[in-house]
Length: 271
Ligand SMILES: Nc1ncnc2c1ncn2[C@@H]1O[C@H](COP(=O)(O)OP(=O)(O)OP(=O)(O)O)[C@@H](O)[C@H]1O
Ligand SMILES: [Mg+2]
Image (tube, rainbow, N blue to C red; front, side, top):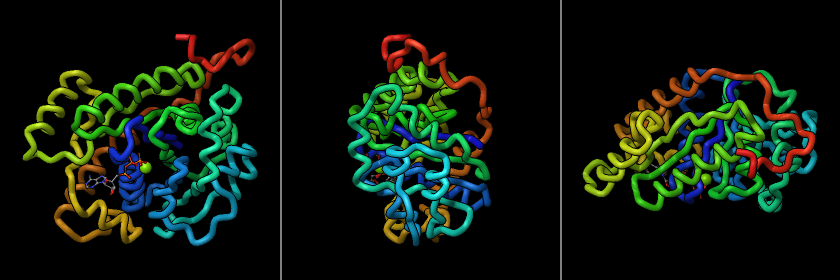
C-alpha cells in the first residue's frame, strides 16, 4: 500500500485536481484507492461525493485510533474502487497545531489500514499541521506546480517542506513535481517550464498536464475525468496514467519511520 501526499504551498495550482485525477486513473484500472481529504475546503470530498459519512478526517485527527479511522472510510460516489475519508471545516483547527505529537496523528490512525493499493492525501496550501500530518504519514509526496513565477516559488517551498518533515518520517521521498494547467501557446508558460526542468531535472515529472476545460467539467459533474467524453479529457487521462505508473513504481518502504522519539522536538532544527 503506497501512501502519497499531494502538496504545494501555493493555492489553486491543482492539488485537488491532481489527487482526483490520480484517483480516477486508479478507478479506471480497478486499483483499490483511498483518498484522504485533509483540506478544510473539502473540494475532493465534494467531487468524490460519498453518500454516507459517519466520521470525518477532523474526527480522525482529534481521536487518532485505527478503529475510528476504519469507521471514517466511506464509499465514494464513484463506486467501490475509490473510498474517501471526507473533510469538514473543523479540520482548520488542526492546521494551527504543529507539535510532534499532533504531526503524527494521521500516521498513527492509519496504522491498521489495509486493503488498498494506493492512498492519496490531499492537503491545503500551507505548511500547517494538516500538510505536516499528510507528509508524516506518506511514503512519497507529489508537488504540484503551475508554470508561473509564484507557483515555482511555491514548489521550491514544498520541496523544502518535504526535507523538513523528513526528520519525522525517514521513508519520505519526493516523487517529483507535476506541472499542471500548461498552456503551450503561452511564451511565459514555456519559459517557466524550461526553468523548472533546468532547476529540478528529473524531479519534473513528464508529461505536464495541459489546461483543459474537461477538468472543471468533470469536477462539476462529480465524476472522474477519465469518464468524461472529450478529446481534452482523454489527453488529461493519458497523462495521468503515466503519472500513476510512475507513482506505483515507487518502492514501498515500510522500514523505520523516524528517529527514536526520546528528546526530539518537531524535527525542524535537526537537519
Ligand atoms: N489541468 C487543468 N485544466 C483546467 N483547469 C484545471 C486544471 N487543473 C485544475 N484546474 C482547475 O483549477 C481550479 C483550481 O484547481 P484545484 O482546486 O485542484 O487547486 P488546488 O491546488 O487544490 O487549490 P487549493 O489550494 O484551493 O486547494 C479548479 O477550478 C480546477 O478545476
Ligand atoms: Mg485543493
